[in-house]
Each structure stands twice: as structure tokens, then as C-alpha cells.
Image (cartoon, rainbow, N blue to C red; front, side):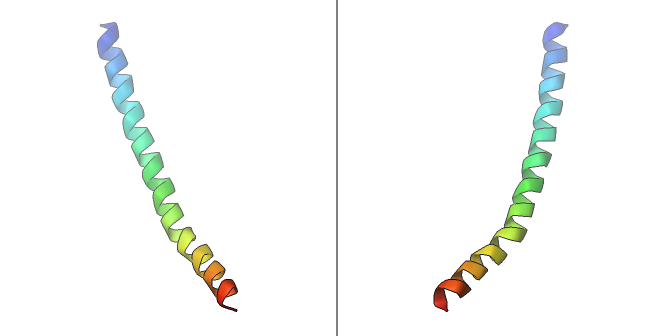
Length: 45
């Protein structure tokens, strides 16, 4: 009984963690190119 509850919590945690990392990755991919191009623009000038 304890192991099944633990497995259930582990599955919930992994799903939550995956959603969190996906959100962070999307946020990073959306913001990072702007900073990167800004840096390139400054270096070229």
C-alpha cells in the first residue's frame, strides 16, 4: 500500500516537474535570442 502511494506521488511529481521545465525552456527560448542578438549587435558596433 505504501509503495503504490509513493509511486503515485512520484508520477504526479514527475509530471509537474516536466511541465515546469517545459515552461522554463519555452520562456528561455523566447527571451534568449533577444539577448543574444543584442550582444551580437553591440559586438558588431
